[in-house]
Length: 309
Image: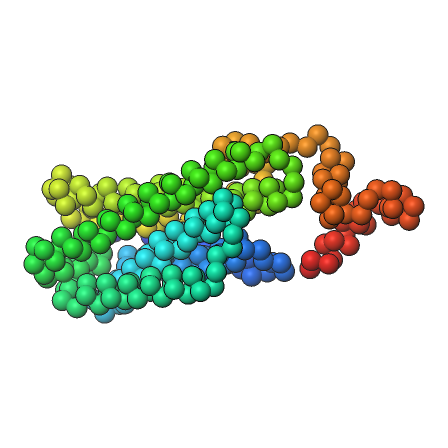
């Protein structure tokens, strides 16, 4: 095994383990808000991508190579679509204050899945699968126009999705900054929602865009070593899901993540300010009634938690 294969294998195994742990943690949550439900769909896609990478790096025969090439390509395309969907949902909820409709979701996924299946059928219909230097590779066995279409299909979606994500995230950022001084529950809700999900678009940009650059350089004959390009892209796909799970872990503590530095949140000087805010939004009973009944705020908060569990 060369250095690239060993490094990619470590990344794929680490990504598989991390994705599995996050899936288990999400399943154990009693209350799953929209952000957790979205992640519960995203993480199995990442897990499928990681498992496919392992078998691509430890090929048994050409048949298994073909199966896991299909798996990786489907998982990667669905991941692209889902990261874009996350940005769209965030934009609708935070900027437009709207919820995405079930009808739109069904249409979106039907379109994405159909497009992926058609592309894979055309791509692998004439392709020759072979193993070289412990790597599963394929030769499209088509004309120059066909090869150009294949590379365009590999490069164009990532660039388009990247540009859309940048545009939507900028709109989201400006909206949150404009509401930074508001201390109402709706504004706080938007910030928590954005904090949990906005990092996935950034990680997509950091990992998928370089893979596009490598492909563009290869198409332009700046990089001529096909094995090197394949190794570099495989390296990116192997480590990418691990960083996705790290984003989930980093957002567990709101005051200790990069989001809070990029889009500052209003700070509360004391616990009493937080309690007053909850009372103003009718989440807690007024302090006056609690004093009459001799009930503390902790008991009041516990009642709220029980009502939502």
